[in-house]
Length: 265
Ligand SMILES: NC(=O)c1ccc[n+]([C@@H]2O[C@H](COP(=O)([O-])OP(=O)(O)OC[C@H]3O[C@@H](n4cnc5c(N)ncnc54)[C@H](OP(=O)(O)O)[C@@H]3O)[C@@H](O)[C@H]2O)c1
Image (cartoon, rainbow, N blue to C red; front, side, top):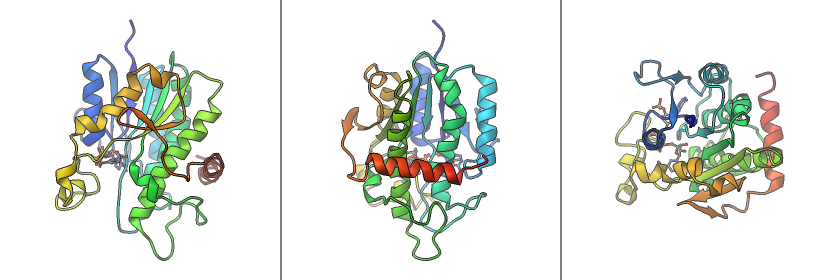
């Protein structure tokens, strides 16, 4: 039997790394992704804050495998201070949504070349605080930047993207899924400062292990049921309702706004 292949973005640590270890143990060919070319286990690198690097990353993957059974868009970041990406977008929108959208569109032919391809987004329960539509698009607002709401909005976008992509791929074999991993013990949000982010939180006692955080992602990549359903939001291996903002209209409008922002890429 030929090995199944998966690309997991953001697999240098946390949920992505735990998912990679789990699937490697199951005999999958795992393409790890990091932004830092110094990382010694890395096969594919690319800083997702830069859309040109996203395109280059996709090109590298295309040279490595003829088909991708799973693309797991896991890389993400949370910042509370206003920052801009290389392409002039607000940083969280750039990495958590625009890079994900662009990478997926570039790698879609590979996923379609698999026997039953799957595309998975690591979203979050934080999508409940997210806001759509986006009157200012993906640019950094000139005033009143709120990093937490912006993070929530990007995670809402992960699920809206999942819904719309599933709709657009409904006549194909490819299925699309989003999930909340739980509140996981990673360095998420720390940005290099161990007193900050998840690990420095006063709620750290409530965190689950990285292995438990990766569990639903691995389930969505490997179990039979997610091969039959598409466009849904999961956590703890179960389909969840999610926010009332997860409407078909919001999904379509976000898709159109994103295509416009990525024009020419
Ligand atoms: N931890 C939680 O409680 C929790 C809850 C809900 C959802 N999530 C989601 O889970 C996903 C994984 O987070 P985690 O908790 O496992 O945190 P993590 O350990 O910080 O992992 C984040 C991964 O994303 C990568 N990444 C971030 N910015 C990048 C960029 N510009 N270019 C390339 N890679 C980049 C990181 O690479 P570097 O090492 O190079 O920074 C790292 O591999 C995120 O999408 C997050 O939104 C986490």
